[in-house]
Amino acid sequence: MRFLFLALVTIAGIIGVVVLMQKGQERIAAENAQSTDAAATARQADPGQGSAADTSSPTDKTAGGTPSPPANPTADIAAPLPAGSAARPVEKPSAKAPPVPAAPAFQVIAKPAVVAAGVLETTRGRVVLKDITPLEATTRCGEGASAWPCGQLALTQLRRLLRGRSVNCEIPDPGWQGAVIARCVLGEQDVAAWLVENGWARANLGSPYAEAGHAAEAAERGMFGRDPRHP
Image 1 (cartoon, rainbow, N blue to C red):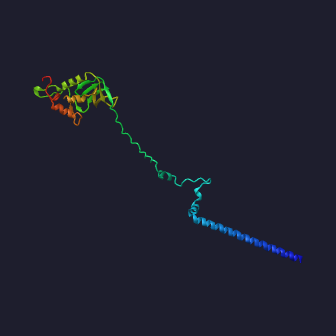
Image 2: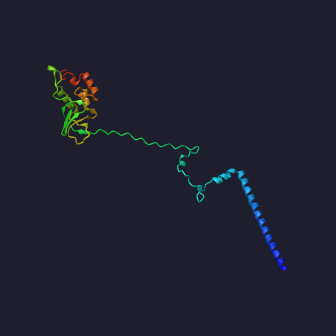
């Protein structure tokens, strides 16, 4: 009988433990259900919170919690400027300055000899004045008995103008030799212009001295007039 009693007590203890375990599981399930209902109620009250949490990507943050850089590095450049900030002016490429023309290369013709009204001679060669037709020393103007040596008088007048002084001529080559055609000046006086204005040389076609030549011919100066030795 004693053994039967002990067996019944043991079976009753086991049944009690099983009942207690079932009640514990039911209590835990009830608590989980209450937590789920509370969370659902919170999401319904603030739907934006749940969506923001759900849509965040794991790649949006680095391991240290610092936000990762934007996928497009140029996005910040195209972003609009904050209100009140001044827009930076667009830099324009600087225009290139036009080339400066080279200054005329003048060569000093030291005390040239006058061989014709428009032709100068030096030890290096001859310089024919530019844009005019020189008047040869042998040229005569007029007709018949009234003809006179206008070429010789033109040569004399040019010698009087120069009076043995040096002139500056536009000759690019510093080592020139032989015969060259150039514009020459005595101080600020253009020698060819002086000859044309006074009727001692003719201006070439298209010459800058053409107008002065027409004026000298109209006024009958130099070769276009009478012998100045016999007014």
